[in-house]
Image 1: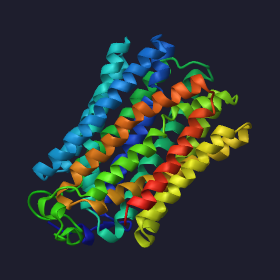
Image 2: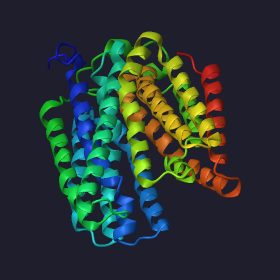
Image 3: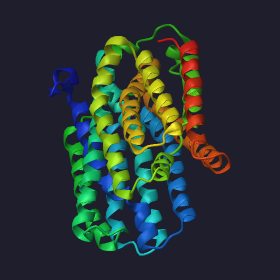
Image 4: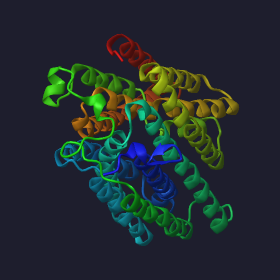
Length: 409
């Protein structure tokens, strides 16, 4: 097999580049369709908010649990691409069924299948990005991948807004015709994503067969974890710190509610999401490259500091321009920290256990989001709209302190 270090596209490893294209196309499709699914359930199918919350909760919880299993399985089989194909393929096959959804049960089934697909693909895909990158470019690779993913979200949101405007001519509530048109358009990039994955991404053997790119950095260093293919204390402590941070990182629905609390219209909220994703996409690749040169720990802590400032600002915000600035900062946090954090996971675990490691990481984050959102909801209800954001800033500060004191690079 040709070494991916000798096969590059626009300065990136071939696999990393095309996995970025796959994520870009998939996010165009998913942002178009599933961002508007709650409005379809509420406006078209007349479903209540508790049911909408139940649909999302079950779907996301299932995806979180599957990420551990799929990551572990990719390590056992030594196959990342095949599981990624299954995951992306399942999501793509499910989406067209929404066109025919006439009740919330069918819509929930599609959403569940989509999240199952995400649960199957995410950990093997991240492990494949790591396997296809040299140690010197790990941050750059994950930054590029996150940037492409988020650029797809920007385009998807823009296309959805354009279709709604053209079909509804400015109606306040989503119509069935507009949503069905979005589904028909949104399925196209999803199909293209699977085609790119099948045709252009190469399988990299990890646990079995030839070693991944960059394997020289993962040779036995004499530690028990290295010899046994396990996880050392540093990774376990890092997961605990990530849980602490995530407990203060409630659903972005609370950010949307905070904007609405400050008199933002639906159109302005959509524009806020575009600003957030545009900043996220622009910053991800440069932040990853900086972490390759200066180290991951400092970059992650800068990202978490930006998050703490953002949430503190959202607690204190009183004017519309405050929200615009703070949402841009929120995108900056994601761009700085998200890809670099995934690169850091690859740095501190054995190569042959990367799939399992990403599964544990994604599950720790995913399962922490449920109590985080419950805490935020109760704080909003009992104390006020600012309370969840004060709490989030405090938890970020606590995570930063623990990271600085307990984790060595």
